Image 1 (cartoon, one colour):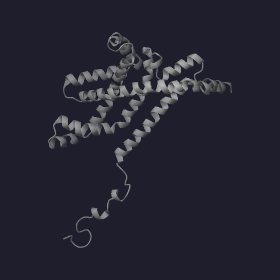
Image 2 (image 1 turned 135 degrees about the vertical axis):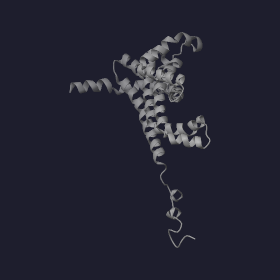
Image 3 (image 1 turned 45 degrees about the horizontal axis):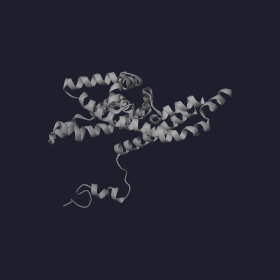
Image 4 (image 1 turned 30 degrees about the vertical axis):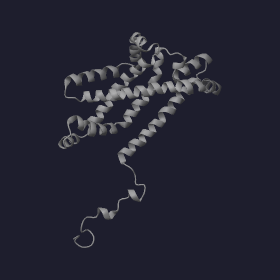
Length: 259
């Protein structure tokens, strides 16, 4: 039983968790959300541009998008964060001072864009060609058809995959600590590391992991519910939503010739 006792004492010290909890709530959680939400928004916009460029018939748009995707999906996230955060640090110092967050958000956004771009591209290309042809036949230009018909359907089809990437982005935000953070800039994982180093107990890191679970698990279930709603439509909730069988009857199906 000694291994179990060691495990319990190392990761389930409630006193260590209690000490770390206030700082995780007031400092770590807000900073993690700032990093993740900012990178998700910017990464999604860049990803959509990459997706559109990736399906373009123009080579000078399609090839750079392909190269970008291959490079940023192939590099480890830590390497990209260090490359951007350290390599552009002198420029960042001149623009916004000693704050690593803008460069950290940029690095996370560039990583996310490579994955999200492929997700969006696969969704857009999964829409039947007849949808585009029908929109063009109705008088839409190619850009209008893509914006109003094809892209909304494509994004809806890959919504779960997109959210999975956002969940990965929330966890990858912990890698920004490589750039060096002052006390007020620390995110959840860094605070857990600091408390673990100070107390010699890993319980604060487990608490940080629980915070990540609290962020990602509800997000997954909410998006699954939205996806199911979009796929199956709204269920009948009352008389107003019910369809009267008489409304579906063919003329003359009941009582005479219908004349």
